[in-house]
Each structure stands twice: as C-alpha cells, then as structure tokens.
Amino acid sequence: MAAVLEVLSRGLPLEPLPPPCKRDEALPHAPVRSHNLTAPEQRLAVQNALRYFPPSTHRALALEFESELREYGHIYMYRFLPQFPVRAYPLRDFPARNQHAAAIMLMILNNLDPEVAQFPQELVTYGGNGQVFSNWAQFWLTMQYLSQMSEEQTLVMCSGHPLGLFPSGAAAPRAVITNGMVIPNYSSRQNYDNMFALGVTMFGQMTAGSYCYIGPQGIVHGTTITVLNAGRKYLGTEDLAGKVFVTSGLGGMSGAQPKAAVIAGCIGVVAEVSLEALEKRQAQGWLHKIERDLDRVIRRIREAKRTKKAVSIGYHGNVVSLWERLVEEKEKTGELLVDLGSDQTSCHNPYNGGYYPVQLEYVEAQEVLAMEPDRFRSLVQASLVRQVAAINKLAESGMFFWDYGNAFLLEARRAGADVGVQGDATGLNFRYPSYVQDIMGDIFSLGFGPFRWVCTSGSPDDLHVTDQLAVRIMEDILAEGVPPVVEAQYLDNLRWIREAGQHHLVVGSQARILYSDRVGRTRLALAFNSSVRDGTLQAPVVISRDHHDVSGADSPYRETSNITDGSAFTADMAVQNCIGDSFRGATWVALHNGGGVGW
Image 1: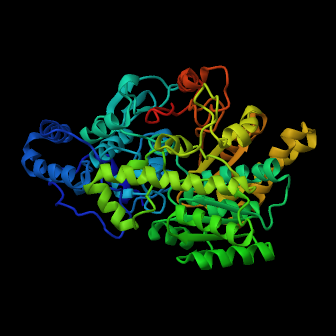
Image 2: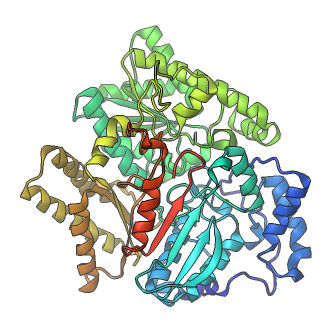
Image 3: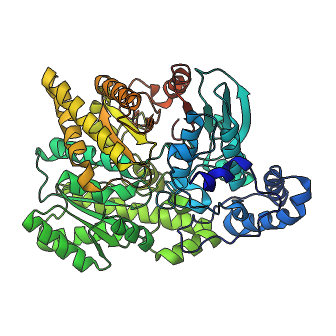
C-alpha cells in the first residue's frame, strides 16, 4: 500500500489539473450550509479559495468554486477528492520522514474514512459540522507538509489552513492546531456561518479537527458508563434488564446509543429521520431492528420488557412523534413504557441540519432548510416546544431525563419550551440536569476520563494485546485496594474491556477507549511502551484524550456545568491544558472554540 499513499507527498495535483468531479451521491452528504454573504463577500470567498492555486488555474476553477458556494453553501473543492481508498493504513505505509508525522497522517485518513466519517466528501467526521479541513486543497497541502516534516519542525494549523512548517525541537509538538478561534464579541452563529463560507474559520468539534476520532466507539463507551450510572442514581439498580432508554440520533456520535444500551443491559429505542443512518448502524451490527411504524415500535418495547432482553430498536421517524406516542400510551393504558430518556440530535447546530422538525418529512425538511431557512428555524423551535411538552408529561409520571451535552435544553429554552427553573440567577440550571451535573461530574472529579489508543500497525492482534494489558493492569490495581467509589469505576471499565471484542466496536482504525484515573493510565502507557520496545506490539500506539478528560473543556452547559463559583463561563482551564501539554511531551495539541458554547 505504500505505493498507493505516495501521492500524499506530492501536494495539490496540478499538472495536469484533475477533471471536474461530481460528488458521490451514494454517500451521505452535509446539508446545504446557510450564510448571508453579500455579492462582494461571495466573490471574496472564491478569491480565498483560489489562494491555494497558481494563477494559471484560476480561470478553470473560479466558476466551479462559485457554483459550489451557490449550490452547497461552501467551497469544498470536489474536483480534488482523493482517488484512492481513504482509511487508516498501517504506519509503515505512509511517505513520511518520521513516525510522529506518519501517525498524524494515519489519524487524518481515519477521520475521513467513509466507514467512519458522517459526511466524508464534505470533510465532516461527526456532529453534522465537525470539520477535519475546510476544503480538499487544505488536505493535500497538509499531507505534503507532514511527509516533508523533520523531528525539528512543527506544522501550524489554523482552522484547517496549513500555515506551514516552523523550526522547533525534538521535544516540541509536531503539530499545533487551532480551530474556530473567533474573537468573543464576534463568536455568534451567524458570524460563524459567514466566516465558514468565506473559508477563514471552521468548527472542529472535539476530535474531528484535532485528528483523534476513533469512530463511534468513543461515545459508545461514554454512553455505556452514563447509562449504567444513571441506573444506579435514578433507578437504584445495578441491573437494567427490562428498563427502557429512549433517545434520538444515529449520526457520527449519536450512532453509539443503541450499542451502548445493549452493552448496559437495557432496551434502547432510538429515533432517527435518516434511513441511511439507520441502515449504516444496522449493517455495523450496532442496531438490531428498524421499524417505520409506531405501533410496531410499541409492541417491540412491550415484548422486550416482558422478556427483559437487551435489544436496540431504531424508529425511522421523528423523535417528537415517538415521545408523543409514549405519552398517548401512558394516558390510554396507564403504562409508563420508558424509564430513562435523553437526546443526541445535533442541537448545537439546530437550524443547519442538526435537528429536523416533526412537521416535515426528512426530504421536505432538507428542501425547506435550503430554500426557506427562516421558516425552517420557526418549525424547529415549534418542534422543540412539542418535544419538551411530551418529555415533561412522562417525567411527571416517573421517567428520568437528562441533557446529553448537545445543547438540547439550551436551544429548547431559547425556543420557548418549559425547561426553566424558577429563581435561577446563573442561567446554568434547567428543569432537567445535564449528564455532567447529575451523573458523570463526580466521576470526572475522581480523575477518571477517556484514555484512548490506536494501534498503528492496523492489526487486530495488536488491539487484542492491548486489551489484555488493560485487563491485567486494572485487575492489579483492584487487588491492591482502592476506595469503593473508585472501585466501581474500575469494575465498569474492566467489564467493558473484557467484553469489547465480542461487541465488534472497531470502525476504522484499530482503536479502543476506557476511562481511567492517573494511576491506571500511567501504568497502561508504560506497558504499551514496553510492549513496543520488546516487539510484543508490531508498531507504536497513538494515545489520545477527548473533551471529557480532566480539565479538557470549558463548556458551561456540559463539562463545567457543575461548577458553581461563577467560573463556568471562563475558558482559562482548557487553554492552559493545551499550552501545558505542548511542553510536556504531546506529539500534537489542539485548541477549539465550540461555536460560542465552550472551548
């Protein structure tokens, strides 16, 4: 495969220019991006895109880029789509001067793998708008820089734009990345939409623009741990057999929910408007059944409750319809068919395809979004109000609901839904808690957070070795004795790792995640080093974190929602974390602005 990847070292394909390329309609695609650029600003967007190309190509490309901006709301440069299979190849195959650069290249290709990415041809990994790059020119130039980079150079990335290679030292990061660093006074949704259309900033989500996504497995683990601890806190049980968890979304991150529900031992019911997303998760073995009729959904829930079988049910329809039907069943029969509830639509981006209103069918909604964005916004707000009204009725009957950090309650409040708390002066509290406030915050405060790794050999055998190392290390720590609250977390993660292989969690790179505190992650990292050194592992291991890790994110409606001294709205912690990691040995670091909701 090394010969296939040699093209990455050549930079932009210019001699000759590749022919115009239509996007592959067999793949899922991002919705049309909204902006309100003036005619001069649209010309500026095209000029910005042409900066990557020599003047001799501008005539051929200008009209094409103008057309993309008009048709899709952004200039992706489809002409420059890679013509080789994009995936995480073994580290040895990459045309790089050192393993660190090759590892970054491997992780970028994994983020753009069609089996992994939500909208691969728009360079979106997950979350509806989590970009790896803003356009395909940036991809080719970044790969060329990485193939040239020495151990005494650092690649600087500015919202997808490769600024270049700069002198550094062997102990310095090989890449420093910033995404969405907008001056706070201008960090609004409309300004962001316009700046993204201009090609001058982008939203990197958490692990998209930092090149550390490991497929939905990461959120499978987080959701499994959340559901298990929700059972302990809300239902007073360690056994979730026969309990029903209702939620929505089967995209890049939310696609983990049905798998997590089954691993936790409960009945997962997930609504999704996109048939493509439902079928993708079913083909992966992460979703058991797809139903288009609510009568059949209700029958399946009752049957699963009777048998107490852990099963996942995907409803092809709008989650508001599902919630309202559950209310109808409660009022008609007196039976509460849901115990736990949440939501994982992309409500951080509700008016640009992250949330679809119940009043419209999916295809019609996409058309309204593209042609009548103001009407779409009004429909979304009305839909959120209806959804909350149904959730409130079920919660009054004994269901427990939490916000999953997707800004659902925040956007519902902005839409006028009944989610407020009387007398709340902070603006942080809602009728329902966030998962951090009520479930995971105490766990994070113990120092437990995501420890994620990728076996760069690409070998499942290496992943199995690392799983066994993790089991042995956690068993040793438990044998040494830890406080009961810490023991519970180690036991959950021990169960997770022991069962990981049978649950077929790998999508894309040979990756794994668990939660651990400082003791566990230090021992595991040292064990990886030793195993690489003695040949037990065939190639190095990439170790990464994500936004759930200790001090990894400042986000007042999510990671720092349980901070009550007034500092929840400040971002020093995340910035200091990034700066500190850069001189403590990290191979690459990334600092992201989350669209005005967190850093």
